[in-house]
Image 1 (tube, rainbow, N blue to C red):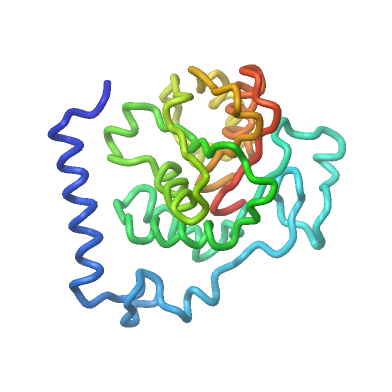
Image 2 (image 1 turned 30 degrees about the vertical axis):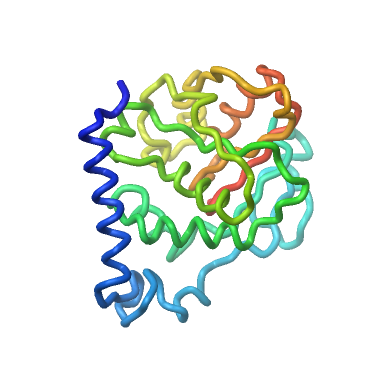
Length: 239
């Protein structure tokens, strides 16, 4: 069920209060605790683990840019993955804080960093954030992938759409499953594409963390079935 007007208003007020507090109140760096005008201080920002070289298909870390042996043997349905960071410390602290602990300032910071470091060409027709199941969206109050996509849209002007697909299975979080086979079975049949537009030939799925790739693979397959010609993935971090 959609969020009630009262619930949406409460979430909006909380978001604005959190935003204004970062302008009006002294802050400390989320990571080191030093005084900072931003959620993460400049010193900690400089130490973030930016991904240097990776597989062009799946985004896994490689010693040099290329295509990993796994993708050469069995290419994934998506064409290209861009990850800004490797999912190691402190990203494995920042993203859960943004995702589960209502830390929208950190989430906005990560979204802006994504927008600043992404290679946009070839420019996609639309950004599609990975949808949350309605029950989980009500519990969390926001979709972290949508918030990241909004930041990218503000920087690039690329349209974002979050109504063309939906999550129809309320699966356990992928992070709670350690086995790749379990993750793939968990996400199978989880998404439904409701509609697309004729001018959508190249779309980008936006996500926070990509681990095995099961989630984006499942949604990619649904969009390919719906007639989309190319699907890429932009994520904040790659495990």
